[in-house]
Structures are given as C-alpha cells and as structure tokens.
Length: 403
Image 1 (cartoon, one colour):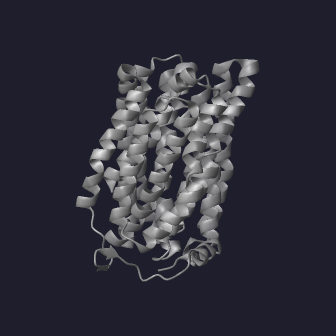
Image 2 (cartoon, one colour):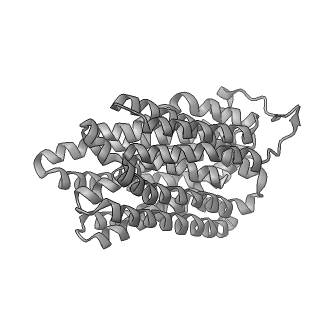
Image 3 (cartoon, helix red, strand yellow):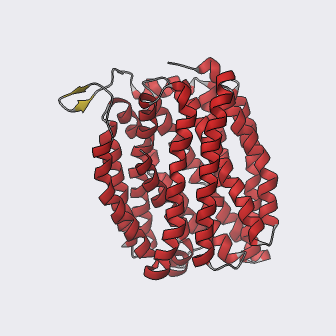
C-alpha cells in the first residue's frame, strides 16, 4: 500500500515540477496552467471516484489497487508524448481516473489490517509514504527534466510505475471471503442509500466542507511552489528544486508520523481530537505561511513551506481515522471516494485556477513575481475558515461513530 501511495504521489506531483517549461512551450497563462495542474486531474473524479469507491466496498481491493496503478502510470507515459495543451490535459485526466481507484481501496484495506486503536499511527505512517513520492517528483523529476526535458520526466516516472504495478498484486492480500477468486462483501446497500447515510452525519459533512476550503489554498501552494522559486525568489530550480523535495519529504514524514502518534494518544481520551487537533494546526499555520511569502530570503521561505507541508501531513491521519470511525464498515471506501471527489474537484480543482487568475490580475499592476506572491498570500487566508469548520465537525464525531 505504501508502494502504491509513493507512485501516486510522484505522478500527481510531477506536473507542478515541470509546470514552467510546459507553460513556456505551449504559451500558457497562469490560469491555464492552473487548470492543467488542478482541474484536469480533478474532473475525472466526478465520473470515476464514487463508482470505484463503491466497487472497493464490495470487490477485490488488491485487484483495484494493482490495475489503478498500472492505469495511471500508463497515462503518465502518454503525458510525456503530448503534443499540445489539450492532449496533455486528456492524459492528466487519465492519471486522475487511475488514482481515483487506489486511494479509497487502500484506506478501506487499512481497517481490515489494523485495529481501531492503532489506526491513527498506522494512517500517519502510510500517509508519510507519500512524502517519498513527492520527494521523487521534486528531486528526480527536476533532474530528469533538466537532462531529458519535461517529456522525459513523465516517461521515466510512468514506465517505472507500469513495472511496479504487478508487485502490488503479488504483495497485497484481500481479507474478505472469496468465492472462485472474486472477493465479496456482505453489503447490499445501494450507492444512493450509502451516500444518503453519509450525508446525514454532521461530522462527515463538516469534514468534507472544511477539506474543500483548506485544499483550495493548499493546492495553490503546492502547484505553484516551483514557479515561486524561479519567478519570485529567482533561484536555480535544478538546485533548489531538490532542496524543495527534501523540505516536502521531511515535512511530510515529521507531520504525518508525529501527528499520527500524538492523535493516537489524544483520541483515546476523546475521539473528537481526531478532527479538533487538525483544526488548531490549520489556523495556527496562517501567520507562519504569511511570514514565508512576505520574506525575501530563501531560508525563510523554505522554513515556512516546511511548516505548511508538515501541517498538511499532520492533519491527514486524524481526518482519515475519523472517517474510518463514522463511515461504517460497509461504506468506508465510499466515504473516502466521496471526500476525494469533493476535495479534488472543488479544492484542488479550483485552487490552482483561482490562484492563477488572481496572479494574472495582480501581475498586470505589480509584475509576474509580485502578482504570484500576493495571490498565494491571499489564498492562505482560507485556512482560517477551514480550521473553524474542522473544529465544529469534531463535536459530532463520537455521536456519528458506526461500527
């Protein structure tokens, strides 16, 4: 499962690493590359996320994860063969469809492998594996792009993923009862009924709403991170892109592993802290992020970015564990698919285009560097309402818990 998470994070993050050369070659605006990096990946979840999540609640999750990994890796290869903005857009949609199948199946499988008391720590460790994928995208992706071009970076990552996909099939095991090789669940609940049951839980609705608001800002930070280095701080991306990779990897490891361990202790006293603790982290990160974007020294920016990425990673184990509690055993994959759909479509899908549009508007007056700086600074203010909604959702976790 960690291997699949690493590959997914690498292929998803790679687009932001090579965003500037793509923008230059295809003569794109910031808003357009925001659509490419955000909405192209998100649009596919509107049609694939929920059905694949429901399939994971009933079917063979090992098969779903393996085929999904092969699918998104193949589409990453096709991204490297794109000859226009629209062919690249379609390829990125394909990457999103593939990744839509793996996440819900992985987080559903965790609940069958580990008892409830261990899940915050386990979810933290598993989420931390994504940092290795992000590091590979930043460190190896920058070097591949420098030597082989942005197409070579996509081809290298995609081919590796295709070769690794069979390992998921060989390593993973499906705990559900099998009949003639097809794994079955006892759930006969219709998808519409499952969605209705989830929407009646205040904690689930609150987590979804807060995650959307949070990711509008966070996605802009992630997608335009490398662009910020080159355009605003005037840094050599082949050198500082690798440093950014270390920052993201280290922050994700510290945040997810540390956050999972702390939440495992807090949740034994009160499960509401699975969501309330992330709420505090989100709100308290705002002044640090603002300080980083107003700074002119690279060291200060990297310090701020480390805290931002650590905060994102720290809140994930609690949110995931809370969903595992409130969704019920037969709706867990559906719950994750629904959250992923909403976050990716409205959060990650809208975040980069919004930040890009603000950047384009401000650049007309302040120039492209300061325009991007203040666009990112303004979007960071959304962390405050996101944290407030997370806190409110935490009040309903215990009441909504379902075995």
